[in-house]
Image 1: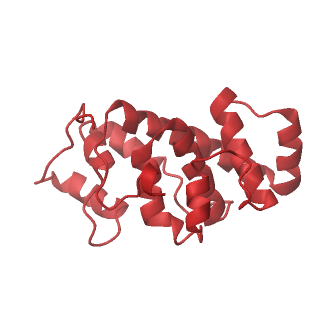
Image 2: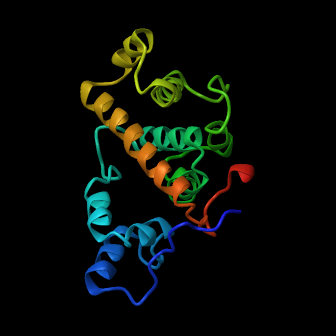
Image 3: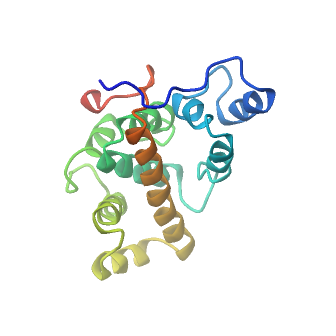
Length: 182
């Protein structure tokens, strides 16, 4: 395992930072190492929190988490993938088989037609930062314009988060899932 390239901020935290961590984390949970690392640049942390797409949006929790998990898996971000499995997979009603399938080939048997569209969407965005006309036609039949924009934004946002977690070598969270334990 590689050592972190940027050490996370340690307590005691500045009151404003402590308040930001409290807002971002469920009660009783320490701030994630990603947040503590980003706190080394408070302006960037503030923008990251402001740009979060974890609120109730135009897509379901399941759809959001499928896009995030597949994007992080394709980017090789075990950190972010594992955090989302730990915090959201159960609430998104993703089975163990489905969580594991976010790491594998696109044609897994466990996906509904709608889920398979999301997996293909994440894959094409990862490969080319674009969507083929054929896939777009299928997506347009299944999702509204609002939903499509949100899904594209999610893929881009979590690609950025994956770049941060990978390049900074952020240490895996103890409670998070691992690629090999999916």
